[in-house]
Image 1 (cartoon, one colour):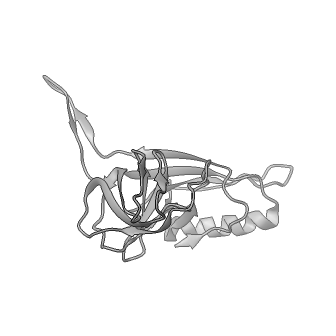
Image 2: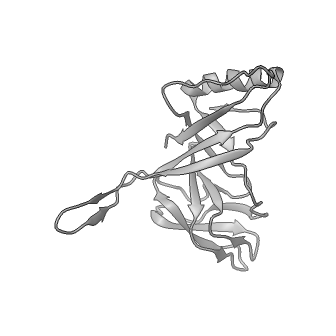
Length: 193
């Protein structure tokens, strides 16, 4: 898994939910939900000096094969949630029980989170209903897409600095070097798990 330098950070992102379900049409229409929905995010970076861009392009070239991990550029900070972990094994669907919140932490609709399983694989989700942690630091979050991997009690839930990990999307990847010698870098990452 390749990590890019922290600076410069992405100056924009375009998230897309990849939906493996469908609408089956006939005499009446019915929504057929299938497991495996996940995110693809297109990232843009500010123009970089050639020495800085060299590191980015070198690592992104490797990331085509090895995958990349990128912290999301949050428009609004998501506060200080605490040391949050999964509260109980065997969870499924769109509800995620979490413990370790700071008392009263507001997990707001639209906040991003990454759940990290025992193998260190991160799964990106978004909170779809605002909930406040109770005095004991417990809360049940409603998330999309539905949970898609078995989680163990105590797996990490990252809200302060969520990330996406996956492969650089597409059959090819390139960058622009205009006459002003400032290199423009942009790419999409699709979750592989």
